[in-house]
Image (cartoon, rainbow, N blue to C red; front, side, top):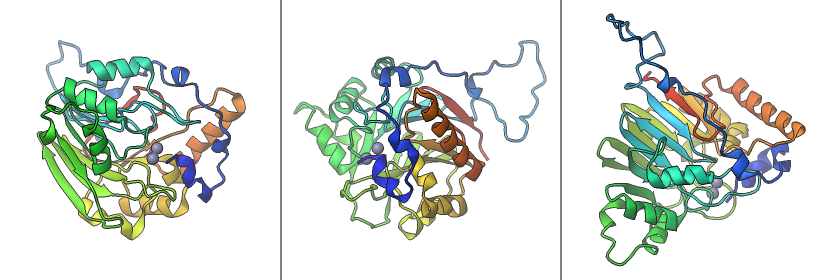
Length: 313
Ligand SMILES: [Zn+2]
Ligand SMILES: [Zn+2]
């Protein structure tokens, strides 16, 4: 259920972190994103082609952290929420602040223009059935995609005449099937694959590849699956990989990520809350440095509503 289930692979000092103070941890003002930088002055008449590795705001994919494993993937006026709508945290991890929850409910930036809500699994630090159900009733064009277990939990919260069957997409896989399902929802393409949850409990967990604006973003939820059990051939190209930090610390998984998946952009997620004490902060910096040293493609998001713009390769 928790990241700590995976920690047997490395006695990582972050486990000693205290309980995060969610209101503090998740209300930091977001830094300006690349995508929001000012346009050229009005008198500019010659449009220079973007330099290598850069692109216009319209071409860029924007990846925004909510908290924990919750990320928003946006291209133009289409957004996808992944593991954003949840209501509980666990010791050492972060949770959406009341302001973020309000913005999610109201469809305010950066949680606006949402077409699809995804949840990798039904654990409370990724998903809340009542909150998702209420969201779907409030926004009658939004689709929800998750495990069948999570969809069943949402259905149990809805009124009998909810009329949302066509917007609920639940997937149940044989464990280890490595098969891939595909959905097209408007401008959003989604590949769905079973990726076994970390730990001993048989929790259904799916990974998603979201195709939006011509780029493909992988979010794996709470997994450590690597090697043959990871159907990379069926999933195809990955432009941005959103991976739980323990995946990056496990030798086998990290090697698979670096040599087989080899994404041009990597965003570590499900990060521990940044401790308030100096010793804990030093450990956090050490964690960050060790990941950045190993993966040159790392884009680091650890502040709520912080975002990164990713240009097409
Ligand atoms: Zn979990
Ligand atoms: Zn989790």
